[in-house]
Amino acid sequence: MKKILITGGAGFIGSHVVRRFVNRYSDYHIFNLDKLTYAGNLANLKDIENASNYTFIKGDITDAEALKVLFTLHNFDGVIHLAAESHVDRSIKDPLAFVHTNVIGTVQLLNAAKEAWKDDLDNHLFYHVSTDEVYGSLHNPDEFFTEETSYDPQSPYSASKAASDHFVRAYHNTYKLPVVLSNCSNNYGPNHFPEKLIPLCINNIKNYKPLPIYGKGENVRDWLYVLDHAAAIDVVFHKGKIGETYNIGGFNEWTNIDLVRLLCRIMDRKLNRIEGESEKLITFVTDRAGHDLRYAIDAQKIMNDLGWKPSLQFEEGLEKTVDWYLTNTEWLENVTSGAYQDYYTKQYQHS
Ligand SMILES: Cc1cn([C@H]2C[C@H](O)[C@@H](COP(=O)(O)OP(=O)(O)O[C@H]3O[C@H](C)C(=O)[C@H](O)[C@H]3O)O2)c(=O)[nH]c1=O
Image (cartoon, rainbow, N blue to C red; front, side, top):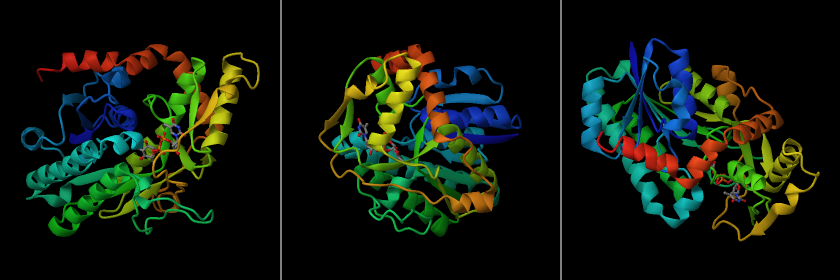
């Protein structure tokens, strides 16, 4: 049985990856290492928590000693590294927290893997899951990020992810650590923490609260359903070429204002409101500092070389997402109030 370590598996994207691997691969044992910060909670994984091929470990990727013990104890065959601080606005307020987890945490994990695998590098894989924000901000509508685009990170968050990508490649180049990387565009779907644009707006529309649109709402993001990202990660992990990078995206660009208007229309319908009622909540607020104008991913390489493609149309994915949030009201209340974090922190405080 192969032993796979997934870091950040209680978070938004991580939990969908953990579920997919636990359910699809009965010949793998999945170890989910997560610190359980405000953005990660085990309620995201209730349905698989008792699976015989799944183990949760509460821990911090910046803790070198703990990593050494874990790698010695479990002899992991592969690592899928998703643990990260992810929210751009938080990175603007507290860049060091992002350096700590995203840069130092990644290097500690690389060191642990390098040490544990040094006598048998060929039979192991370190997969780093990253973001399209490392490429910076596009201004020409004809341009897309490809795997060859130069890095030009603009926010403390994207600078920390760019640094971690560079370290992963440096460990491949210097120590021959077998690595693969992917850089994905904006994800949306169930279990997304309601500080991010889509779940924040769903929650606020539901509660008749203002929908804060930074600047004029003209910034463009490419959106991908989180389960499609999990499927792409599965494909890259199993079929990706060592040392390569794969861009993942939905070919699905929206300005923020158009996206929020679409969301308002869907919510009006679902909540039996008069058409146009939710749009009245849109409030233009001070722009994000250094706000990247446009991200657009060219995902041809993963489509052509590995045969992955997005499965859902955006409107369909958005409907599913809205339905999930309107059904899972307890989840939404517990993450917003911090109740899950208190509960799970207490449950695991001695582990
Ligand atoms: C929270 C918020 C956001 N926005 C704007 C800012 C962005 O242009 C867009 C999406 O913002 P959000 O913070 O949801 O996501 P990004 O800053 O694009 O970054 C996200 O996608 C990438 C790929 C990652 O790698 C990040 O980890 C992830 O957080 O809406 C608003 O206008 N109002 C708001 O209240």
